[in-house]
Image (cartoon, rainbow, N blue to C red; front, side, top):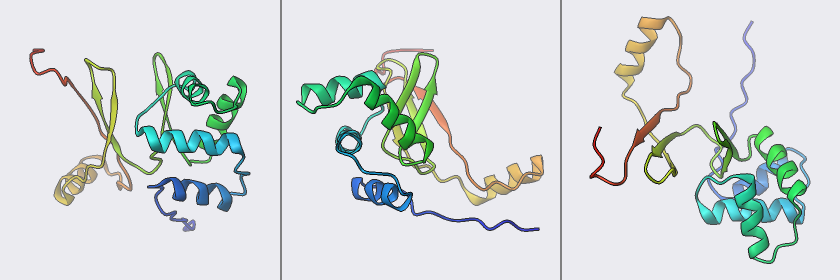
Length: 149
């Protein structure tokens, strides 16, 4: 029995994110819009606390609890990305499958779209017996080239 797969357009802009919210029946409140605008403007991964602090520095009227609730709702619905790390959750604007470069000296996470060669994917499928439908890769390294292994 084949299950029907719904393919959603990737969210690549603030407009895409707002449209996805509306398509999901999520209310686009003033606070939710503030969060989405900040994530698209910043183009980086941030903690809920960083998001709260930045919005308040910009003079946006939003409470701490509201930030957490909106981030949870947006990430649960796949509108934004949530990365679980040992030191807490980080939120980013791109929700479609992508890979990350983790900079070990700045603790920054950068999004990168990587496409593996088809022959490598076939080789992995043959070795494992699993049909690959999606993948992400985490790269780790240093921005400061003077750091050695």
